[in-house]
Image 1: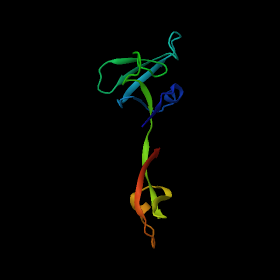
Image 2: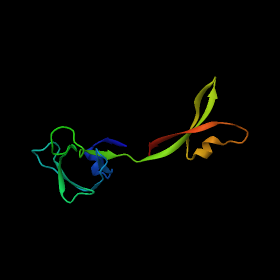
Image 3: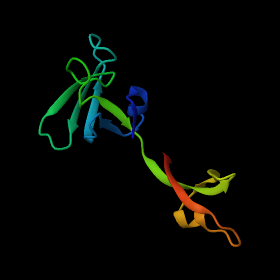
Image 4: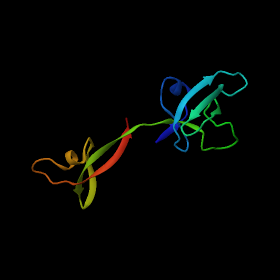
Amino acid sequence: MTKPFDLEKALSGHPVICRDGTKVIKWCHFPIPDYVHGAIMALLIGEDRVNLFFGNGKFHFPGEHAKDLFLEVKTVKRWARMIMNNGAPEVWELNFHSKESAEFQPGHTFLPAYEYEVEE
């Protein structure tokens, strides 16, 4: 999961990733007046050369590109407790840390838990 590139968040330590999911190993920002927001040089996993980006995260290539930079969003799995309400499944409670805990409560019967992801 990704979010649009934000230079300030990236500079504060938020993980950076490419549009295609390639991991960014190391990157540096250079405040160059002739570039939009400066320039970025980045080393990507699996490559042996440095890539050039504009300061807004766009790869130094026209249009959308697989190497455009994004902020990586870490997610965790959660489960929702489901019940039947008037013949239709309905979310009863959210944010269980395991499937088992969402499906079990002494004296009650629940539908199979619904799995979803949230930002860490």
